[in-house]
Length: 379
Image (cartoon, rainbow, N blue to C red; front, side):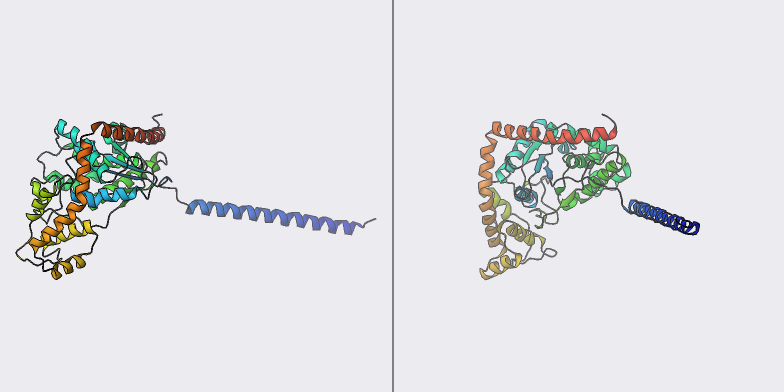
């Protein structure tokens, strides 16, 4: 039979053991709780939704594209078809009406633009090619995003400052079109947006609006980034200080994709250069000649040094060099021009391509808008 002293020692030992285990459990629980709180404090909420890679870009149907549009945008889109599984290209007709348009000319320009894109290599089987205004969700999302945007944010955009100065009474559409542009991109949850340098601020606005909606309502929109090509900007043939533009009054200032070889030769022959006949690449001092070399580089793939060296070895003056530039440009544009002419005569095919593109775009757009409406409490 155990002694009373031995029983008290056993009880004391058991009590100490239970106390120690209880203490260790409390310490472990407190430590785990502290780690969870620390993790919670250091983990920031996601700003953007995770979405698969997708390209979106658009072009206004305001006349036939020129070679600046081709080397700066369209040719890049053709290459992207082989790098991305999902790419949407939009004829942004709603953007074009920020300034007055002739209805008949606009209607024709939409089909002409589709013809030009296909002729340049856009494959409707690989890219979703469609007309912006036929997908009604563009306008719906533009209104939603407009409610998230402030007047000062739009007033500080460089393009608004520039364009509003050229108008006596600039319209509201000109002021708010960056919001519509943001809606174009976010409606399809695009992750990659090929744009020119002048559109970088609008992509920043798009990210700002996406982040704002995601934070306030629901995590819907992904992070989108601008992708800029590495080709030189093509300048006006009549004013090499300015970029080539469809809106410039002088038609000799630009080479359009459907120009005939004779028309291309005429425009390059009349391109502004300078009093020196030597072919040198000096963009600051000789912008006219440098622009011709940039055009040669864009169409031949050669470097400026190689082009200038070849001109020197062949004793070319600027007049002879213009002939060489013409040959390089015509070699690329002639098959494109012929295809544009053929497609313009097949309106039924163009309508079919745009309709098919609309139907595919609508599926993606409506899915996005369902998420937006639910996030806002409209559904």
